[in-house]
Image (cartoon, rainbow over all chains, first blue to last red; front, top):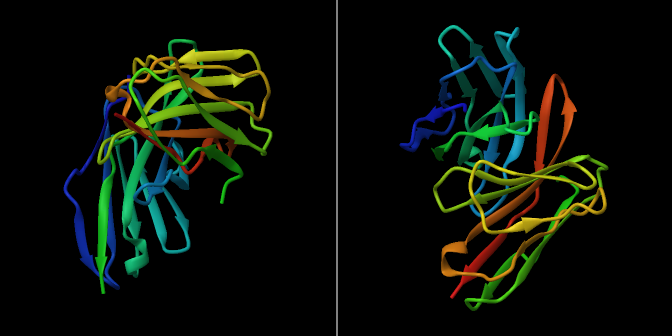
Length: 115
Length: 114
């Protein structure tokens, strides 16, 4: 099964700076990788999907990179705002015992943006 | 906001009670999932379904059961709740989009078993 590692320590940055979060994975190379945002007490919300043949993907202030050689994805938030404070989860597709594909989620990294 | 709903949002019950957590989605998605998440911990998949009358157990062993009689409805049942079942339960559905399965989550049910 896929093992995902995200920095368990919270990332504290100042408003306006760029936040960079890391997701490392082991085992097989996935066809794609996703990032989700989770606020306390709520379900995760999908942010971005990047495919294995894509090096970089952007959406507004978000940028994701995907290095299949290093087995690593970086998630960047530029011009960060206090409203960006949340836990960010990395997710990868995993083959289940039934033959279908499900998602395995990392533990997430908490981002705290101070004014 | 995704069109996926969970009830109740909060539930406090005594040991031994039977409970059903409701999950409904109006997006017409075939695939649905149940996750268990403790505070500060990762999501653990406990059940999933790829369509009506199809259910599978997830990676995390669970004493709960699920059913999928209608596409939009995926309830989770605990026959006899125990304090070890105290957790947050998240329901999700997914669709294939942009090269992969994107999951849409409900708001969750926070369960406390006394």
